[in-house]
Image (cartoon, rainbow, N blue to C red; front, side, top):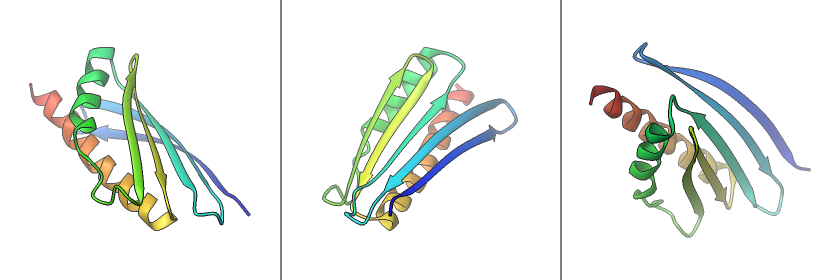
Length: 109
C-alpha cells in the first residue's frame, strides 16, 4: 500500500516573516519514498538566495537520498527521494533546519 500525506504549515521566524510550507509525501513498499515541498518567500530574490545557499550542501548519504533545490519565482522548491522513510525523514528534517537558518541570516542583513 502507498503512504500519502499532505501537510500545510505556517512557520513564523522570529516574528518578522511567515514562511508557508506545502508538502506531499509518497511512498510504497518498493522503498521509493519521495517528498516535495514549496516554501513561499516575500520576493523572488529572497527565494533565489535561500535556494543558492541550500543547494551547495550535499546529502551525507547521497547513495540513499537525493535532493534537488530550486527557486521558482517567490517559491523555494525542494524535492527529495530516499530508499526508506527513515532516510527521507532525516534528510527533510535537516533541510528544514538549514532553511530556517538561511532565512534568519537573510533577515539580519
